[in-house]
Each structure stands twice: as C-alpha cells, then as structure tokens.
Length: 68
Image 1: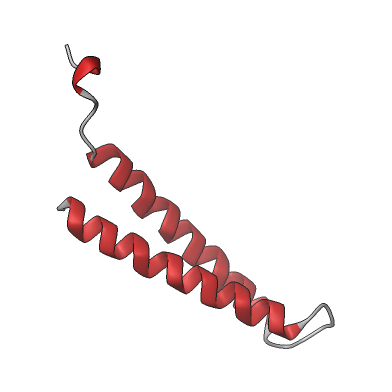
Image 2: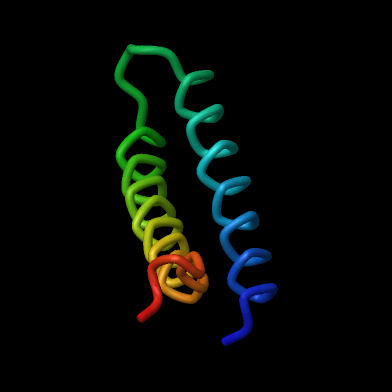
C-alpha cells in the first residue's frame, strides 16, 4: 500500500471516530437504546484508525542518521 493511500484511509477513520464521538456526546449520559451500538461502532472505528496509523508509521522512512 502506498503512503498516500494509508494517509487517506487514516484521515477517513479519524473523521468517522470524531463523528461517532459527537453522536455519543449528543445522546448525553442517560440510558439510550442507541448507545451500545454506537459504542461498539466507535470501538471498531478506533481499532481501524489505530491499525492505519501503525501501518503509516511503519511505512515512513527513518531519518538518514538512523540508517546504517
């Protein structure tokens, strides 16, 4: 995978996580039938985001002074 593709996917995941957190915040602290589904979706989105972040970090080239 190219670095550009990974960066785009990471950005997409970041936006999704932010949107899900906003929806959860709008629900408030009270019980809601939507809450558990949103929390599960948020957990999965954060997991996907962390995966793409790790892949992107692994793809980056080390600084020139660290090669060798």
